[in-house]
Length: 179
Length: 202
Image (cartoon, rainbow over all chains, first blue to last red; front, side, top):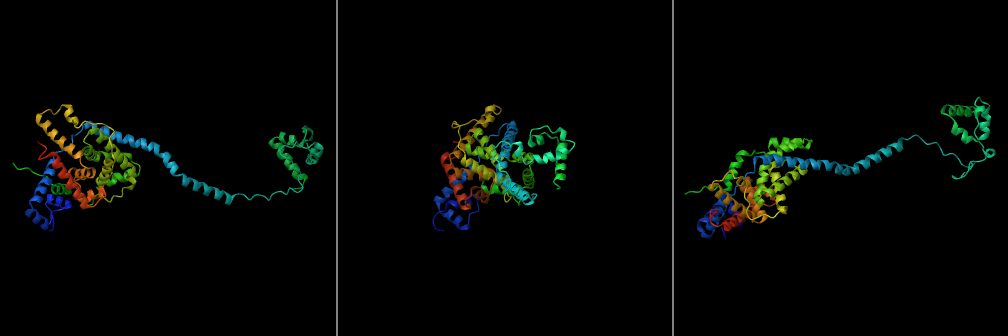
């Protein structure tokens, strides 16, 4: 063995599991024997360092504090869980949206506006004489409900109808227009 | 007069008699599984099982009850947070010690302590015998000397001397090689001896 016993070999010496080569060196080297005594002395000293035992009541209190800290953490954690689930929620929402688009009821073809009267949103309602819908209402006014029509224009009449009346008007219109 | 010196080899052989070969105790494994399934009482059982070991490790590190108590609580809180990552490759206690050592290494006390703190036991006045006081004073001097060791040497000494971990286990806890662990332990013991002189009794 060349040189003295190295730092990582001293614990094997103290444990009594050093290699024969190290043991032979130890017998021959006074300096290393002194170090070995120092290490063993260190162990003996360390063995005297008892830890004072806390009161028996301390452990119950300790466990309770740990439990409370964990409970407090568990209360605040769902928010983080919710935030951490944001990606999954977004994916799920996207999936639902895609499904609803793929399976929705077919939309009727757009109505041609070539011959429609174009009205701006703020335009006043047309006068009765210009109301293309009025002749239709007049046509159905021969019905039993005609005497009840007291409103100023078609829109006002339609808005005043009850559900049953609206259904009757619709049926009459369909019949008149042969739909 | 002959003094019986308890060496690491003796400690290791004693601990091997009580430690299962598989490493992870069956009751620990069951408790960890129960925790993962939301059983908070199961974690309470783990705390009850290891609270003394963790507290003692922390106490030897800081040499006062109040910091040790705070640190031990922090260790269990960190363990609870990290429980999902525990794979059972090592004993639960080894895994817990790793967390405890990291907590100790990162701990900076905000308290100002006198050089010596009377233990609660003595403060209670229940053990007033002179012999007991002298024994406690010696222990206090050694603990104080340990507290002044460099951090990694201190942690290595504590794990080996007071918690019976093998060199391999300490290397795992400290994230270093067995050779480094042995060297750290050697330096810790040498410094302890030099700081306290021939013995704690002087």
